[in-house]
Every structure is written in C-alpha cells, then in structure tokens.
Length: 225
Figure (cartoon, rainbow, N blue to C red):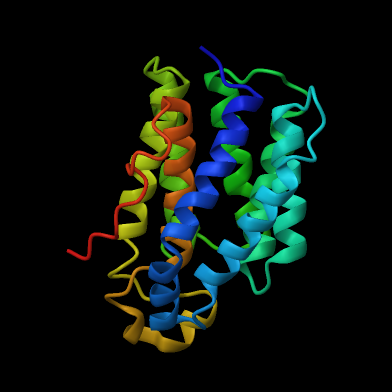
C-alpha cells in the first residue's frame, strides 16, 4: 500500500470538515488565551482550499495538492495561523517533490518537513505551548512506527494519536510564545488552540488513509481531564 493524490485530496476534504465542525471549539480555546480568531481563520482558509481543489489538473501529484493548500492558506488566513500552517504544507510539498505515490518513509518525511516548517516560521520549541507540542510527538511517533514496520495508515494513526496527546499536554504549560505568553501562569489549565487544530488535521490525515473519513473519529471534543 502507498498513498497518492487520492489520499491527499481526501485529507484536505476531511481537514476542512473537521475544522468546520470544531470551529466554535477552536474559537473558545483561543479566546481563553489568545485573540479568539483561530477557529474562524482556519475554517475560512480550508473553505477557500476546497473551492480551489477542483482547479487541480488531471494527473496532479500529491505535491501539487499540498502546494495548493499552502498558497491558499497563506493568502486567505490572517494572523499567525495562515503563515504557520501554510508553511507546513509548503515544506511538505517540497519533501514529496514529484512523487506519485508515498510509501512509509515518504510519509514520515512529509510530516517531518511540515513540522520543521512550523518551527522555521514560528521559532518555537517543544514546551512553548504551541503547535509544535502536537507536531513533534507526531513526527517522533511516525518515525517509530516506520521503524517498527507499520504501513502508511499505521504510521499516520500513530502520528495522530501522539498529536492528540501532545495537544492535551499543553494544558498545564505556561505559554512562551504568542499572545498567550502575556498571560504568564494564567495560561495554565488551557489547551493551546494551535496544537488542537494540528491534532485535528493529523487525525484527518490518518482517517483519510484508513478510509474512515467522515465517521466521526476525528471529531471528538478535547478531553479536559
């Protein structure tokens, strides 16, 4: 099994669906420690991506679709989210290059490049209470799953599980980046909205690979425990 353009386009559609479903939840998380626009901005960006998805030419490659997401998010999403998430997709597109099919190693390379893109743009580290707290454990879990012989769907499932745990683990952290950093210890007890949206996007990638898109597996509310 390998993953091609059908997986990428289904990942995009599933991402748009779960971001729309979780728009209010992400707005609420961002209002608690930020400016409250994260859910609205991402929903607008992925809606724009869906509108442009039909512009992909016949024979488009996975990298073409990832680049479409990148350029659309960067041009339509305001605040920090557009450049951060857009750069993740842009670096992912560069990692897969002209490949028609992505094997497990290529999937790990895609995820690694996306995470590195967020680091490059945001200059954040693990523990800063940002998207990186979801992306880095996801990349580590994906690499471990590859080493254990998992197939592409298994690699993405491991990444999605780790991202969800990483997002949850931001709750006790003091933010060191962004608007939330101004709150100091008042940010403790709140989940970082960027880490939560990252976990949703990675779950969408897993569901698309497993053929379970739209079944609700990527639509659970954050566990506040």
